[in-house]
Length: 472
Image (cartoon, rainbow, N blue to C red; front, side, top):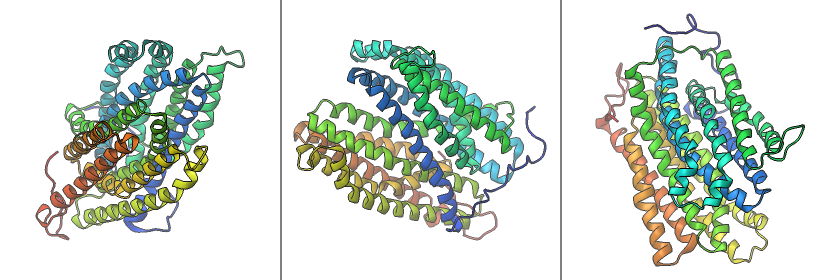
């Protein structure tokens, strides 16, 4: 099969970053990956907050119109990047072994999967106004956000391309490149928002549609910068896609996408439902959900770091077990860290964001933040376990556990406590927290019983020995 790739080993392709972390061993390697990925998630959130703040200047209806279109976009985007994420453990393993021809085939197959995802989803996004009307969304809001929806439909193309390169750069342990580029794009995004939303320098203001145009331009700039850096690092050249490799990526990635949708979907649903309750519940929920978004960045960083490290480690069972123990230990420490930080920040946060600490909204917000702290005490542990399983190409059990925890535990408990007991936002969050705790515990238990049990791997230290895991 023909392919386009650099001869031999490209300069810098297999080099490790020069910076030496004070924490050595697998814990240090996990931190080196997890911190930049976490930072990247926070920077992406900063761009989203910038869009929200600047859109709010056009009024509450404009803000609602953008939120509806953005949520519809997010559902499709998370599914797409999950499918693309199936390339990560394969790419990490091939890179660690220096298999350049395999890497070229994976790049070609990865782009093919991206096209498979992009084509139908762009069509759905272009049809978003009609689809949202069918779902019963207010017609005036849909019409107000029509231009923004159209711009975001075309933004989907560079964003998926960015996801492909980010997956590869994370797999070769170079996430710092992504963080620097995306961080530099934050002020650019704000500048473009101003230019295209309000009009300046001869550019006609487009209102909230301008936010979508800004996202489209910034996404292409980020993609160009990432492609340049990827080429500079030697991660370039694509072979022809192979059906077998495409199928392997989708077999691993589709469950990742569905699991991510299950997690994101329950929180989107909770936000929509909280908006139908009292103003107190809606305001308190808004504070808790924004805080949860920040802490979730640590879940993402830790999960991806664990996935890449175990995918890269080869077949030696001693090394695999070392990574598993280091990742789970880091998950527990991250949980304790988040628990203590949220509890310490609860009082100052409610004082900063609300007019009075003695108000009913402040009381409800305090309870919600305490519940969030309890969930975050165990959530990173489950995220680390999930990342390890995905790195071992075991994604269907993680998907099933996510569906169970979020939709068979969280949703029913939240509905029961709000409808039957009139628990308001507190009832919603008790359900969400119950789902997080159950799914985290189930993921860790599955990892320990099916992967770490003595029957799941051969004698440690034997030549060629490796952890044996069930297919899927």
